[in-house]
Structure formats: C-alpha cells, structure tokens
Length: 143
Image 1 (cartoon, rainbow, N blue to C red):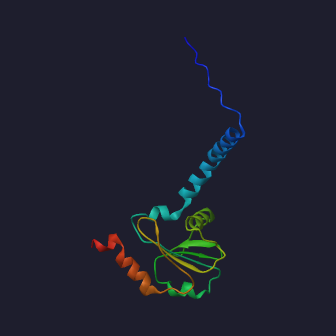
Image 2 (image 1 turned 180 degrees about the vertical axis):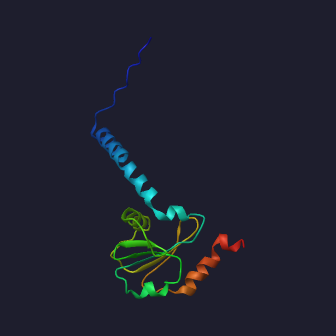
Image 3 (image 1 turned 90 degrees about the vertical axis):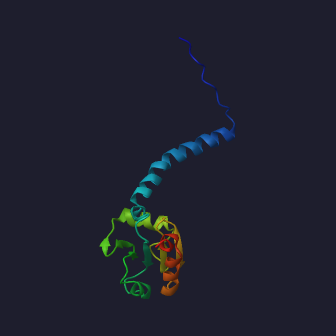
C-alpha cells in the first residue's frame, strides 16, 4: 500500500488569514442556517404576499392603517403573525431578514410571493401605492 504525502501549505500571513477566515465561516454557518430556518417568511414563499409592520409602540398610527390585513407585526420587539405571537427567535429572524430594528422607526414592508421586498415605506403608508404594487406583480398579472 502506497501512502501519499500530504502537501504542505505555505505559512505566510495570507495563508494564516485565509485559514482563520475559513474557520470563522465554518463556525458561523450553523448560526446563519438556524436564522434562516427561524425566519417565518420562508414558510410564506410562493403562498402569500406578507406585509410586515414594525412600530415602537402599540398606539402607532401606522399600525392602525393596516389592522384589517393579514400581516406580520413587531410591536416593541414582540412579533406576531395575524395576531398570533411569534417566538422571539422567529421575530429576530424576521427583523434580520428585512434588515429592520425592533425599536423602529415605524416601517411598512410588502414582501412578494418570491420572498423579495417589493415595497418599503415609513410611518405614512400610501395604501393605493401598496395595492398598485401588488397588481403589478407577475403572479397577479397571470390571473
């Protein structure tokens, strides 16, 4: 049986940096995968057009504008979907996926069936613009 000699890697500062970066990526990959698994938007893909509203407190005017819609809300850091509480990890994953902060500012996000952000507005939402954007979506055009 013949043994192969293992190649030796150069020991330059660049190779050390690359090795450290590889180790860091290997350590972070499970965390990133866990966040992706926790993201509640993943279950909505190709089924619904989620609406996500983040406000700093329950009495925010933005929340009143969209109360009758099926939606995700994050109020003072507590997430829910259609008024059903989300686990804290799922709320964090939702906020991270949309690059939002739980403390605000008040933000309205329309997510397409493909999972991509289609519209992002601040505290004042023009619902005509929201529905016009929904009507322009390809899945809507095929009906």
